[in-house]
Amino acid sequence: MAGTGKGEVWSDDFLPDGVSSASVTPLSGGAVNSTWLVGLTDGRRVVVKAGRRAPATLFTTEAAGLRTLADRGGLHTPEVLHAGPRSIVLAALDPAVPDTAR
Image (tube, rainbow, N blue to C red):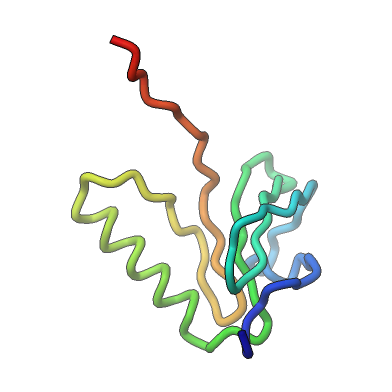
């Protein structure tokens, strides 16, 4: 798909100014952008989705949608920590498997 960020190489410039990575693990599954699980130097874990050639409002629009879903309740959505023209940074969610054995 033209104008996407699939296949990007990690760079700390996907993070907000003043924030640095301590560890970076590529995540699979994204169709149009590259995604990483990033350990920050302050100990937080975040998920970063990025694309240098993404449409300018792609990530800010995604952030607005996630905030709307969170405000309405009912869905567990990641906290948006930063959104800009080249990336969105989300608090990493710890996976939880529902207890279905009853």
